[in-house]
Amino acid sequence: MVRFRALEPWNDPRGGQIERVLIDNGTIAIEVLSLGGIIRSLWAPDRNDERGNLVLGCDSVEDYLAQDAYLGAIAGRYANRIADGQFNLGNTQHQLDTNQGRNCLHGGREGFHRKQWQLGTLPDGVRLSLRSPDLDMGFPGNCNVQLDYRLVGSNLYVEILASSDKPCPISLTQHSYFNLDASQTTLNHQLQIDAKQYLSLNDSGIPKAICATQNSGLDLSIPTELKSLIGCEELTATSGIDHCFLMSTTESKLQRFGRLSSPLSGRSMTLYTNQPGVQVYGGNSLEGVVGKNQLRLNQYQGICLEPQQIPNAPNQANIAGDAIINPGEIYHHISRYQFANDA
Image 1: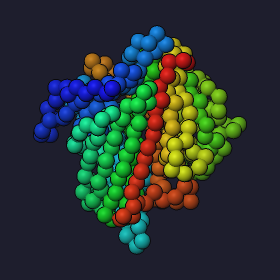
Image 2 (image 1 turned 180 degrees about the horizontal axis):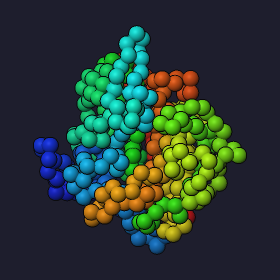
Image 3 (image 1 turned 120 degrees about the horizontal axis):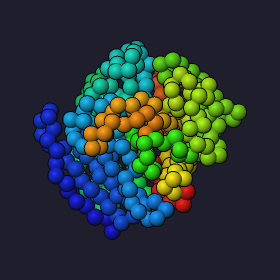
């Protein structure tokens, strides 16, 4: 049985209020905000069956609006980077908001992570909805988004549907930073990845080529301590892992991506997704971001596993499609996060 509890709303300095709701099925629980579709907290049991929070978050709207780490939020209208903030559709060049050097990152400065979503309940979770108007951050078309967070046993399901009345690239991801043992670093965590290919990057984070993980610093086919990745040649430019791994197929069914685990707490999280890629980001730029209790976060204190379309796909369709959603088509993202305490 899933229980719901409305928490005291937060005042939004931009106007209105941010709704907060706690959803608990007795095994895992999440706190969701109407701001950015944010998962502020996620509780799951450790090896002693003691529940603890596994994601990084903030204590106020002001703190969320002041940081650019996308803590717990939905990134969109296009997750990851679009080179030079530009792409062409037919004979039309579209200029997007550029917020990371010359690139458009996670939909621009006022992307979905800063929007006020409409929040409602489902029998086993919550449904959030958003309407992004034509030319929002430069993206063409009126875009309607439906986001479901559902709790089923020890699983969190994230399902996103989106449509646009003009052709537009769409890629949405859940951008929670996981820390499975509440320590000051995730470098003691272990990560295992099924994917056999990743994207090499240029100096601004744009994909250059598809590379095999085998015999590289990003071969994570067996559980690998994240600390051992620091200093790998492939990670030097990004000061840690910040790479997109390619799934073996691009079918719509859920596929296993990999498993994050903490030997300290015994917790593990296995990710399944229908998306063609998963960006793994090790919190390389978290240093100084204000988190809960006004404590500043450390570099590598959380790690993101971000199922998504391929970075810069509208400009590099040769890698894995162009990610364009045409009128009448539906963008569909579904991911399952399975939590256990047997690590």
